[in-house]
Image (cartoon, rainbow, N blue to C red; front, side):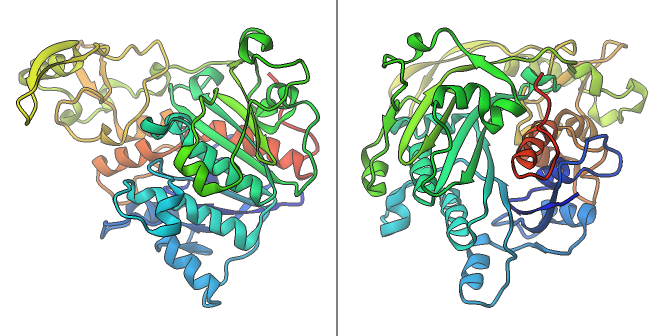
Length: 429
């Protein structure tokens, strides 16, 4: 089999690589991809736990543990060699993607990690891989709150300007049989130059694109209800050519799926179509006797846990003296094990009571938190993947930052088929 080469940015503990290459202890079919270069750097942390984990699982060859900005600076000066690759992958932080901050260094814009998008952009300008696969949180489509849709619009315009045709989809992993309700935006791009990648955008998004084959879905409702446009499906919006203008003024209500080419955007709401096997939280849990005692919740903490998980409507006073009511809905306590779990967050670790940590009830009617290995299973990692010397709290943090391996695997196989690395595409379910 001919293998395509991959560069992995913001590599974390190696979820993309695990999904694309497989690993001992997994049953994932080969995707045809091979990671030849990777970078992982956590700013303001002396101990680089995620990078250390990555190296312990895949070895040090081709791996860099340094700020990607400095790495690309060195590459541009000819002081460091980054191999040309067929595919760039990465799960990058969702913060602030304002063009003005990057182009003019204007003060006052927030989002220290947001500039990392511009390092992805710089990598693509330098090396021009044929394919791109990126993962981000689902709120990317709506950010920033005060200028809805700007951030994705900036990315689409930049990718189109570099000759890439783009498709995106917000995917809930549980909709495709995985044991966690984790919603993430996946962006797939192919460098096509001026060649139009499709004739019918609606068919491409719903049936013919990489994401449509990897993660089958159908249009929600009738197309006429979704777009008030002619049957020929003209673009749902045209992105301003001036990226700074786009950054300053553009807003758009993106649907959960879409495509962009040549500065034109088509966007539709899709609903998942899947009737295969499904996993639930119960499937990842270990036997009660295997759980260390410090993972059980002491009786003295139960009242606080119940308060944090419960619904609230409380009068509060702001620093200005303004009185207001703070409200929030209840979360289940304990978590139902007959359903896919809630999303793992980075604050999952540690024994302190929390609204967002998972708690399950054991057969003996005790309550406990989830083990790091169970969190790994919810994301589809090999058991004890992060047991490489970091604390349990940090292991949980890494899983809160990670992706669902099986979702990326399905996309990777379809990309490989499109690249001619596999004989056929991933089967439609």
